[in-house]
Amino acid sequence: MSELAKAVGQLRANPEQWAAFNAVGDTVVLAPPGSGKTQLLTARAATDLRDNSIGPRGAACITMTNEAALEMSRRLGCFGVQHRPNLFVGTVHSFALGRIVAPFAAPAGEVLLAESNLISDDEAEQVLHEMYLRSSLSNEHFDNVKTTVNRVRQRMDFSGDLRLGGPTIAGLAKDFSDELRARRQYDFAELVSWAVRLVEKYAWVRRTLSACFPRIYVDEYQDLAPGLDRIVRAITIDSTEPGSTLFAVGDPDQSIYAFSGAHPELLRSLAADSRTETVRLRINYRSGQGIIDSAIRVLDEQRDVTGQSAGGAIRVYKAPGGIRAQSEACEGRVGRRDAFRRHRGTGQVELRQGIRRSDPSGCGHPLFLPCAAPLAIHARDGLGREAGGMGGAP
Image 1 (cartoon, one colour):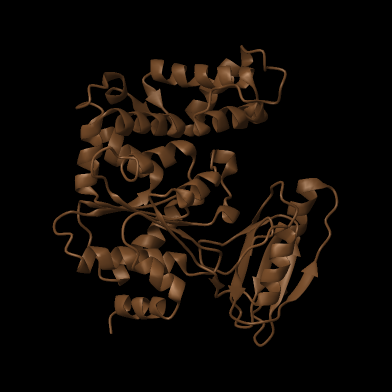
Image 2: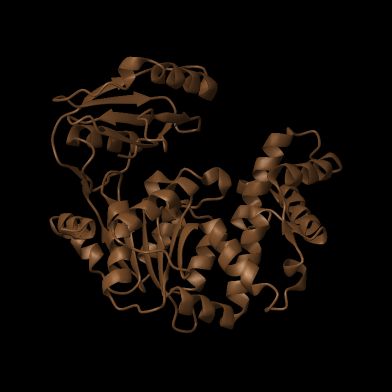
């Protein structure tokens, strides 16, 4: 039996996964941690590409990070999907650059864009710093100004909204974008703005993209910023001509890229759109019910998530003194060897101050990132498998 056949067989055993796998048309899958969403997405993509007579056309499988793209590519390879020029597997930014801006800027007559180049992060920061020194914000801490300016640009919201720093920040953000264009350069935020312009202004660009990529698969949709969301929508559900078919998975509770403009409400909006079919996964294969219930209490919002087993022990570690103290406490706990031992036969969970994310190296060491959320979950179920999430999400 092939690896793809095995994966499809596993999906068949879960009614919600099976419903998502067989969904027709634009589909949104809301999937809590440990629900097998990546397996579902890659198995669906591989099946579409191998068995559904797409012919010479391809698909775009889009993720937020290079690590996630590598994992998706690996899984598709295991499922027998062969590389071909019109099969894209990569990040949203590489899609914007390599599949939208680079091939279409010159044919669309966007001369300024066609003559521009990607600027390095260090160079972009230097340009912004020089503008900051000449601005009325020079008495503010530069790191705070830089973060807020970039959030405004990534949200593509120059209205002066006080929640995004107000009119002065918005003005500096716009001036920074204008300065980059005058220099014939763009950073990642400006790259997305240019890509949005191309797909929204030119119908022939949308038609070409849909012809090349009739199916769009997006992982971790909750981490997309508004500009990236607009690109995906423009060539799928919002296209004024027959567009690509969208298959998106994500969980608004797991959004960790707010600092880079991510807006989890965009996923909720997409799921509520009458043009999409929404499937909710409920089973968390990673954590016991006791762990899930505790996480939901921390989240302080009801969630329909079920574990495969009962039980789970909880430990709470206090770390007064703010985010720095919380991060140091997490780092100290991670450094202890017994934090990584597998405890077979009993479930364990630790509620720690900070944010836990999986280690892409696969070495089993949980990573912690400081943030405003007071708690994160580090769990091991009875089989030694790990679970975790932001802000108490299961």
